[in-house]
Image 1: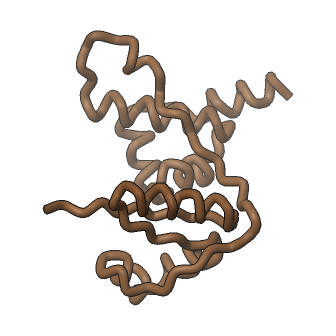
Image 2: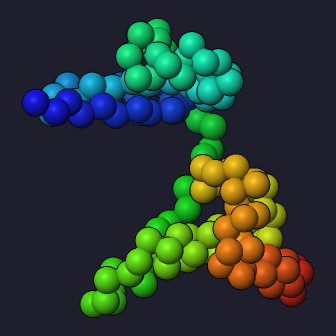
Length: 140
């Protein structure tokens, strides 16, 4: 039987408790980390392996870190056509680059990929980041 696992990264203790309460009612295991635990933990191989074995001690903080979440492109919901993974990926990359005004480092972080991967994908899909920079300069 499959188990559901929810990993939450938040410094808001009350929100973590709400999630834990919901998860307990729905049979979902929750791993909660505050921002510094998550950031520092990702650099530690023991922590990363613990994510798979659930052996890491959990703790919640009390301050919000103000995370930024990029919205998924809406056009795929309205279309009747099935889109390829490459089309979805290209749109996600374009949206992230526009969102961060051509800053590829920040776009890569938001997408959860490395800078080198983003640069390779930008070249592969022939995306021009300078367009986003020009739009940002016109808006300023």
